Image (cartoon, rainbow, N blue to C red; front, side, top):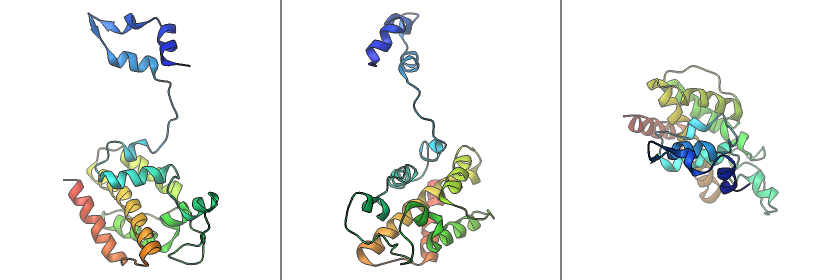
Length: 186
């Protein structure tokens, strides 16, 4: 259905005029179709993380990163094995926190932020980050930025490994992420 039709069915433009002024918020509410609610909205919306990191995380949250399993589903002729471990197939859940490299990075960053918890699957970590991203506490905001920056950094490291066979040491990556988290949360 066209927005114009919805507008006419709801009573026309006059309903959006209050005291002689057009209220765009009323029109938006009338035309807004609801859409799908996602739990991770606050992770990327209003984030203090860098725009590049936020965009890559947004793609990851929608399972839209071009991981090898997705490339194979597009009939691209590549080896599907993970560049890091050379054992398992590369897919989003493997890249993020099933693989030792990203698991250790996430664990080390959380410890530095004063959080002791077990690292779980991609979906469970997204749920945890979504809860933290809704909080106004400084520590929770740090966790939210850290989650985004880790996803971005692991993706960059994956690409460096695939295209130039380079991989930064975990300690170096952790320090870089902690610096970004501190800088972004000033």
